Image (cartoon, rainbow, N blue to C red):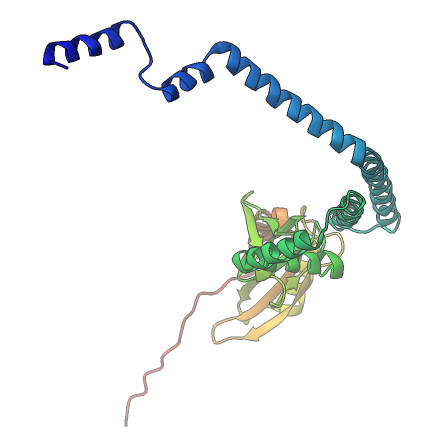
Length: 310
């Protein structure tokens, strides 16, 4: 074949869409819309047959597993509600009551899920192993958080303090506003909210003064005055103090015989939310009472006597 005849043959093949090989013809047929639609219908039919076979073989197991799960879930909710009412009847802490109720419900739901899966013939052993591995990893990663939760559960169970108590721990003091599993919320007189992780409370030295806080005051009087009469005067004065504790009376007595004065100590208790306001008011009333009674508050002084030699 000459060169011109060869180019003419190739041109006729390209521009007249004639197939070059048998494989090209088969590819064109497979891409035809009719053949594509036929393939889609065959896939749908295969999926439908598979679905029918599944329900024909496992319909009773599936329905049984669904019924077991639904009934178990309802029963878990009923038991959790009963546990919550039981805890409230015994006047347990609200956080502890809800924690016990939710934990009970979760455990029952997990057990029911395992029973339902076994009803379908699914082995739960791999799931349990996977849950154990995930729990181990999560426990190692969340050691601090889990320690706080464990300490919170210990606080709720043992109840070293309750909401409304005044506690001092780790150099922090305030009124207990709320006890949660992860942390405890305190509030001081400045309305500052203090959040202490529970792991820093359990195992530490804890001061619990219930609802009140202690105020320690002192005042010095001149040696010329009778300290017993001054103590009686201060007792009468502080008895009229508003904001003091209704459970404890002020304690007043001689604290020290110092160089320049007799020191009178005053110990009184006041609600934590009014601590500093009560302290300032008590100091003002003490000063006014001493001033009115003309009792001198001396300042530090020293008498020096010079002796001339003969």
